[in-house]
Every structure is written in C-alpha cells, then in structure tokens.
Image (cartoon, rainbow, N blue to C red; front, side, top):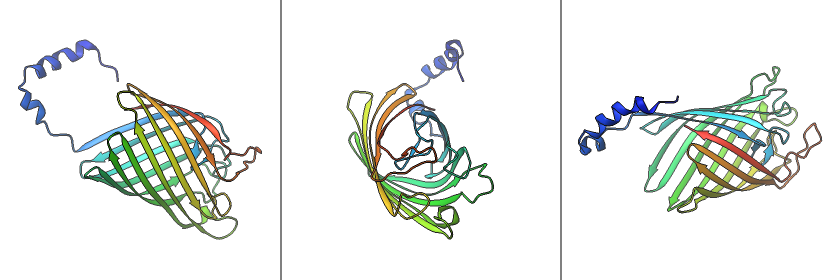
Length: 247
C-alpha cells in the first residue's frame, strides 16, 4: 500500500519530539508477517525443471512468532507432467527456528500439495532439518529432507521413500548490493522424485539487491538426464533468471 509524504508528516514529527530512549526500548511485535512474489525463467526443483524449462510465477507468505515457531505457504506454477495434470504446486510448512551464537537450527515439516491432479495420489509429506552458521558476510548451511514411504513417491506399484541432503554457501560482497551462492545436493532413490537410483545436482548464482527487489541469475545442472513428455531433457544444464520482490 502506498502512503503519501503528507500522511507521514504528522507521525514523523511526533516521533522526532520523543526522547531517544523511548524509541529504542519499544518492544518488537511477537508476530511478524513477510512475503514474496517472484518470476523465474525456469522453476528448478533440485536440479530438475518443473515447468518444462519455461517461466513460472511464484509467491509465498510466512508468519513467524518470537518463540521461533513459524508457518509458511508457498506456491508455484508447474507443468502438467509433474503431478498427473496439476498446474500448481502449493507447499504448506510449519517449523521451529532458533539461533545460538551465530548458528541457526531449523526443523519442520513440509507438505507438498498439487491441486487438480485428476484424483491421482500426488501429495506427500517431507520433514526437514537444517543447520546454518554465519561468519561475517558468509553463511554456510547443511540440510536434510526425508520423505517417508508414500504412494505418491512410488515408481509403478507400491510405495517409496526419498532422502535429499544438500549444502549451501552464500556470501555477500562487502559494500556492494551483490551476493554469490553455491549449492550441492544429492537425491537418494529410486522414487518418483529421483532420476534413476539417485543423482546429484549443483548450482552457482549471483544476485543483486535494489530496494525491495532482488535480481538473480543461476547456473543449474544435474548428473543425470530427465526426459519430459515434450522430449526435453529437463535436468540439462541451464541458466535461470529471476526477479523477486520481498515485503
């Protein structure tokens, strides 16, 4: 919502007249709400395109409590080969996050929901845990996601489980709005989300922050091919661009 400079004048003058100590001691709100909206040239999920190497529109909303508890919803457009004809992925997330001495521990559960899947069993649950440590402008993180056995992950008949482990490194370039990142992950299978019995994916990225906007470009690749119904190799190396706004 836009606010005119005239609407801000009264509150600003009132704050300016307050003692500095009164402003500094104002307690933070127990609940915070944040969100994002992004356009990407290709939605890559662990190295594999979910949009047949085409554009996707994505958005998310997070409600966080000062106790460390949080809940999020995130969604993206997808191609219909991903989940039995569904053209949307909606992720429902609940977790707990705490930071101790520069190290952040995060544990939670993620539910993948694919509406409009024609009655097929495509939804599944994935608990996760991550540990991230910040050292100056750099942050290193290791993550493990495990999806218990589910029909949605089965290859043919039966049920399958799936484990994904990853490491990420991001570094903000001092005195600039640029940051660089690197990612390495491995999927253990076989499952409906794994190429063959397992594969490795990796990515390198560069982002630029301008006010509330983030512009990004990433190189993404995977160790095995994944052929979509269109005949495209949707795990082939490629450049992914993105423009996002955060609020």
